[in-house]
Length: 125
Image (cartoon, rainbow, N blue to C red; front, side, top):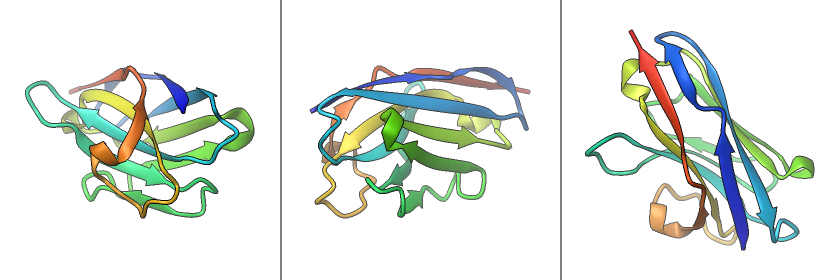
């Protein structure tokens, strides 16, 4: 399995941008998909984006489509979430997660086997 560490969160004004990073360590020689999720206080964890091992396939929640971009650099064992045009409702703790590449694209948290500790994103007005 891989271990994941997120970074890049912070405080940003509405309309601004942030780039989150997720660095993997451990069994990075094995293929894995990457997902980004977020969780606001008193709300369920919400799917944000997914990327295949090769990076050729991406999938987004409707709420972020056109504003967020997921990418990865396997040479650096790092996945990214580029967030543009941030809105107040994007405020949450963001988590990256590793998934089984043999599974189809999934937005279900239980289909991911390894999670980072999260990074806080706060969007202010």
